Amino acid sequence: MQQSDMDRCNAQYGRPGRVEFSLDVHGQARVELRFKDSTLMVYLQGAHVTACQLGADAALLWTSQSANYQPGKAIRGGIPLCWPWFGAHPSRPDHPQHGYARTSGFDVINSDFEDDFTGIQLRLVLATPELSEWHADGDIELTVTLRLSDALWLQLDTHNRSTATMPVSLALHSYFNVGDVAQISMPGLAGLGYIDKLRAGERRQQMAPLVINEAIDRIYLDPPQSIEIHDPVLNRRVQVRSWGNTELVVWNPGAEGARAMIDFDDAGYVEMVCVEPAIASDNRVLLVPGATLTVGQEITSTQLVSDVG
Image (cartoon, rainbow, N blue to C red):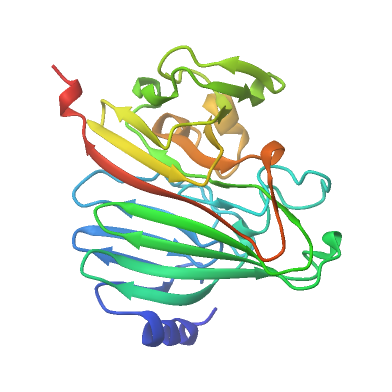
C-alpha cells in the first residue's frame, strides 16, 4: 500500500485520536484505535492485532521483537487469526499452516466512534482458486469486528455464500504477555480433558490448575465460557470470555522450541502464553450454504490483589 491509500482510509474511516491509519517502517498498513487511555494496533494484513494496552495496565499482548513484518509473512505474536483451518490443512499439506487469513490483506468496511468504545470492521473474501477444492460457486467471507474500551472485544463471523458445504476450523491465536510463565496459573482448566499434541495426541485429564514449567501444546475440550490467567508477577488477573468455540488451545514453545524459530525471541517463551479459543481441525464445523459461524472473545484485566496476603 501507498501513503495515498492511508490518506483515503483516514478520510473515509478515520478520526484523529480515535482511529488513525498509517504505514509502518516496512510499508505495512496498520490502524491504531484509541479509547480514553486504551490503545490497540491492528495490521490490515491478517486483521492482526499486534499490541493492546488497557488503560494504565501492563501490555496485554506479547509480540516477538524478532517478528517478520514483510508482506506475505505471518507476524509472530499479538492475535493471529487461524482461518479457515487450524494447524495443517486436513488434506493438502501444500496449503499454508493455519489457513489464508494470517497473510491475506483485509479491506476496511466500517469504523465506530461510540461513547463506550472505538471499533473497526475488516473483511476478507475467498473465492476461486482458494475454493476450487470444494468445486464451489460463490465465496466464503470472514468479517472481523474489533472494539476497544476498558476491554478488548474481537469477533469473527464466517459467512458461507457458496453452493458447497465448507469445513471450517479456526483459532484466535492470542499471545498474552506475562511476567514469568512459570509463575502463572489457570485454575479454570482443572477437571478438563485435553489432547496433548506433544505426546502424539494422547488424551489426558487436567487434575489441578494449570502451571506451565515446560513446553506445552494442548487442546482443552469443552472449556468453560470464561478462563482466567492469574499472574502474580504483573499482579493481574486476565479474563478471556469466549463464545462459539468448542476448544481452548494453550501453547508455549519452551526454551528449545523458542530457539528453533527464527522469528521468536530466544528468551521470549518466559514472557508469553498462548490461550486460544478455537474450533480445532478434528472438530471442524461443516458450514452449509447460506450459514454463518460466529466465534469471539472479550479480554479484560484486573488486579490480582484478592489472591495476595
